[in-house]
Length: 175
Image (cartoon, rainbow, N blue to C red; front, side, top):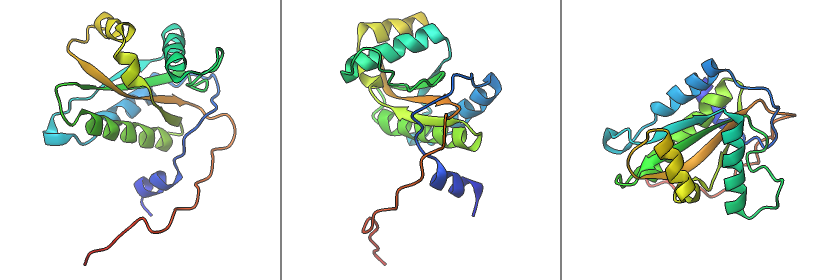
């Protein structure tokens, strides 16, 4: 079986991370994989923001926690030391689909490189706030963007979950 197919079958969402940082070299490889995701009409519209600064990472996690309605002290990023935020230009009708393909590439590349990952939602809500808009502005990002997702990254603490059996009756054939 090809490595790509094997990675698709064995990648799982990780929800407990070591505090060890992921090297910039590895993050760059993961980001590059995201940049090669397919996009409608080849627009390549999604952007990726890498967050490894602990202060901003924790602030982002706190905003996400508040939006999710969890109790204080809960970390919706499960201790992951790196976050890749994927956003799509609001003017592009395929932004969510294109950004979702970027997220998939990020997670598969991370798995291939021995890095745990998990897609964390609520990026849309975060970047609809003044806080999110100000963050983009502070980074020199112009235009209207919709948050697609957070790809949290780090070294898994403990064993990776095993795949659940695949449900039946999910494929229909017309020959």
